[in-house]
Amino acid sequence: MVGSSFQLDGKVALVTGASRGLGQGMAIGLAEAGADVIGAGISDMSATREQIEALGRKFYQIKADLSQPEAAKQLVLDAVRETGKIDILVNNAGIIRRAEAEVFTDEDWTAVIDVNLNSVFQLCREVGNHMIENGSGRIINIASMLSFQGGLRVPAYTASKHAVAGLTKSLANEWASKGINVNAIAPGYMETDNTEALRANEERNAYITSRIPKGEWGKPEDLKGPVVFLASEASSYVNGHVLCVDGGWMSS
Ligand code: NAD
Image (cartoon, protein in one colour):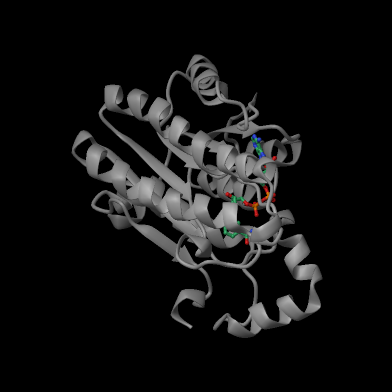
């Protein structure tokens, strides 16, 4: 029955940046579908742990600063030591720096590319090797509307998210035949810390809201269904897709 193909019982999901925002929402969604969750990142994850354990699922927290070059390799070693396997990888951790392109610093550029792109590739590679050995796996990268559009005052973020979409397709081509589905979710404008500055700017906020056909910003819970779909058997013939979850933004 199709309902059971969405179940994730017995699966282990590694979610980066699961302390708050979209990562927290997706981690809880995966646990609601039956998965145990490894949360990886730099911030306190006790709020996520509390909600996942209340569902009767296991939660493991592993400290990993994904701005550091060796962090991905160490994280995967630690995660496999802790749980024995990784069935699902959600590359969610990400940062944004805002400034006009003509004064955008090398430091900001490198910081964004390191977390949003370099660590995503390194985690895909390290977890991909583990999944190839197991003959199956699901990788879900978190892209953005700025995987398709230019945005304003966020050149490094836009470059990193365009690259995440391309990387997703490239890895999907290589690994689909090895039982690994690589896809991405491109969230629209969502209410999280990442968009606090944007929402605080009345004029930009009003403009953005007016352009969303659904008429409102998204919430972390809105990613639960999409991430469970892409993590489960229900999406077994979906490869290299970038799924917009955007209240219609890309169609408007
Ligand atoms: P957020 O700022 O609320 O959360 C980001 C998470 O990443 C936090 O848990 C943070 O601790 C973690 N993180 C940051 N730097 C890290 C590092 N060096 N090492 C490990 N973890 C680190 O942001 P969010 O809005 O929940 O965004 C999550 C993802 O979704 C990001 O990739 C973001 O680009 C993407 N996204 C967000 C929106 C939106 O509207 N909020 C839209 C499109 C895409």
